[in-house]
Length: 319
Image 1 (tube, rainbow, N blue to C red):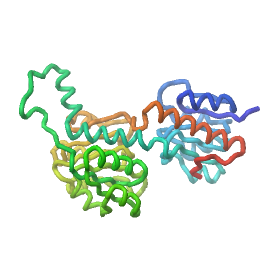
Image 2: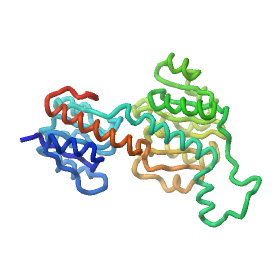
Image 3: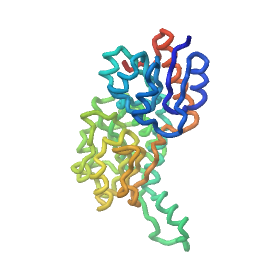
Image 4: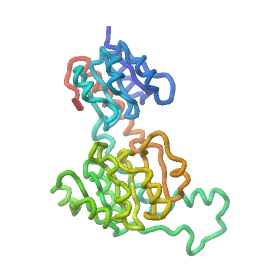
């Protein structure tokens, strides 16, 4: 009998086809996020689990999956998984790094342009029937050419955004990271700086850090007070990196010019106050949502799971 696995949401066929060829596959039938009680029920008797970043794979879920040998996450991040609980049971954890770099950087780039030039706000205004002709002060935004981009977290995605911004808009790049990257500095003429200096000097601040105790609420009320009044905040990293209440206050009072967001503190919940703000551009966590990227992620997640369950070292093991 082939190993049994449970997939918490239907993923692209490139991954499902691989799984069906080698394993006994059960897929959650409903097109919504699985609840924790359902997950606990469905993981029982399974040798493998393919999950999403939004699935709560905590110690209780892991204990219910007493036969689990591998948890393969269809994501780069894995902060939704209790790594200690998995390690104590000898469960391998895998992810899909690298493949979504350009797609996520593209979304950050799109948010940056849209926020600077008020694209979404003006589109909605026109669709309401308000456009009566060109006007000198109609939806004035900010230029990006020659401005300063502050990258917080200069990993693959942060560096990809920096390359795009420098090439398209000749933007000056500041970055703050756990350590300096001499290659990045040489290739992009990027300048390493402390966080306060970056927040004070950047016209656009883009977040690309993982969620941890150190980065939780990294962008708080004090950070917004440090930023320029015309500054734009972009978050395609993790919602809790930003203190959402402080951000709402900063946007409401025009302490900063705008924000472009693909992630939220209590995702999928988005506060009504944030939705109501015209200077906030809100996306439903689609950073990696290109056909090419999502297909590759599905294939990587499937191959990781197959390799572990067939006794091979997976290409992308976390633990």
